[in-house]
Image 1 (cartoon, rainbow, N blue to C red):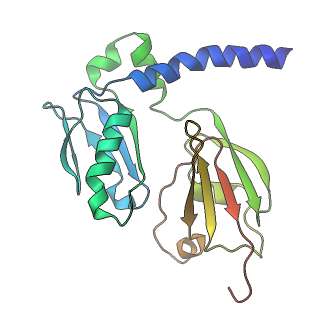
Image 2: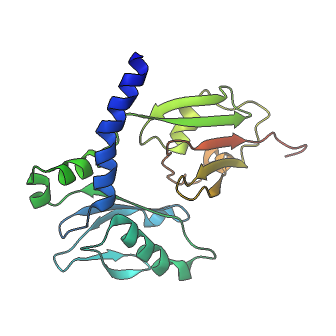
Length: 211
């Protein structure tokens, strides 16, 4: 009974925040956080200039003010697409609201600000050649590399070059699979910054003969 009541309370508390975040419109002075999965060198903070534009490497100047985060994310992805063999995976979040919006004490600003800093925990699932398989709760904002370090590590049979991150879009039900070469990272390669999301599944296949 207590768990049911607690669950209902959380739903009531979190639902307005989610709705407000999706309804938020970007304003001049906001600072946005850009992440491009296929090219971490493009990851950066984007300041929305007084004219309402943001400057994105390889994409140029793009109109941002007045758009939702999803709309701007789509524009950035389209502008970057000619530079990649396939459509890039772009993530965009609010890093910091402009001073005026931050000072406004209303539900929309409060909800958007609540999403600026990662908080709470998310559930991630690990299967295959991992020492601690199953559902693992981690802090929001944890990266895939941090997860591999914190979750008990891999078995000696793990195919470290072929780790998979499987992510399902809850709206469309479409699954996207990202490949992660942990072996290359161990050998000194730059690790792509992949921030885990609730429900992500990390699959570690078994190493093949002579692999």
